[in-house]
Image (cartoon, rainbow, N blue to C red; front, side, top):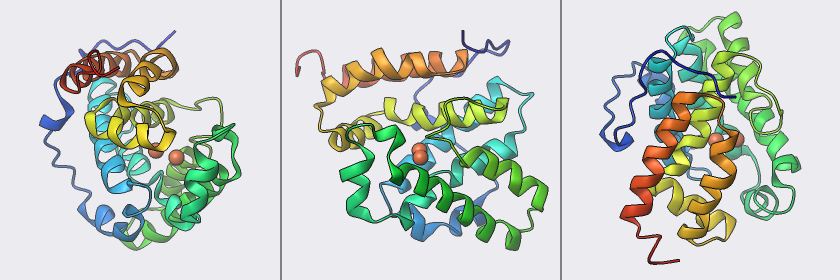
Length: 214
Ligand SMILES: [Fe+2]
Ligand SMILES: [Fe+2]
C-alpha cells in the first residue's frame, strides 16, 4: 500500500524541471564526490524528483529531504572504485559491504560539509539518519526518509538512468526497463512516485524503442 497524496503529482518529463533550489553552496561543496559512480548525473536527477515529491507531500520537511538526497551517495567517492562494480552490483548487492561503507562515508561527508555552511547539529542528524541505511535498511523511518528513498529510485526511469544502470547491471536497456516495471515500481513507497515512475518509464521505453530492440 503506497502513501496516497491529495496533491496531483507532476508527471511531466523531469528534464523540463527547473529548480531554483537555493542549495548552490552545498552542491559546490561536493564537486569531488560528484565524480564517483556517475553521482554528477544521479544526484541532480534524483534531487529534481525529490523536489517534485516534496510538492506532492507538502507536510514533509523539504529542506531535510533535499539536502539528504543531494548528499546520500557522496560516500561512493571514498569506496575503492573497482569494488563498486565488482561487489556493489552483483550477487546479493543490496547487502554488500561496499553498500554499508558508502552509507557510513556519506554520513561523514555530511558532517564535514554542512557545519561550515551554517546547518545546525539537529538538522544534520536528521539528514544523516536518512543517509545511514538508505540502501541497506529495509524500512523507512519517516515521511522524509520515504521521499528520499523514492527519489533515489526514480532517476533510473529516465533515459540517463537507464543508460547508466543497465550497464552497471550488465543488462540491455529493454531488459532493464522490464526490471524497473516488475521489481522497482513495486518497491516505491508513495503514490506520487509510482505515477512519476510510470509516466517516465513509458516515455523512456518509447524513446529508446525497447519494444523493437528487445
Ligand atoms: Fe546509495
Ligand atoms: Fe542513490
